[in-house]
Length: 72
Image (cartoon, rainbow, N blue to C red; front, top):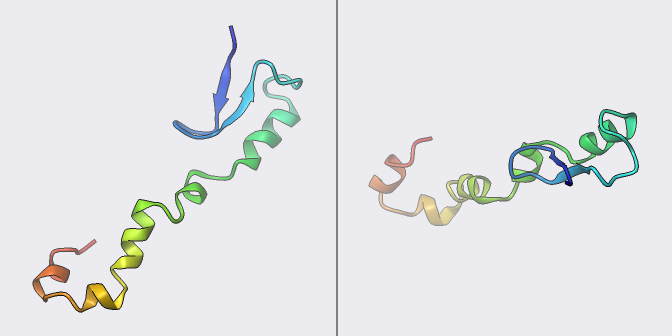
């Protein structure tokens, strides 16, 4: 049976049981640290793009009711 450790749920694999370094070794911790944080991976995805759109001239040109309903 093969084990996989993920950096976070749905995140990248940072260790498998077939890796040469054992679990909880310095190499394991280095692999975990190298994947970054969940927030790093979310940059530029759907939530970030929505916030960018709210600052565009196209959005600000919409009817006043539209921006009123988008308070975050």
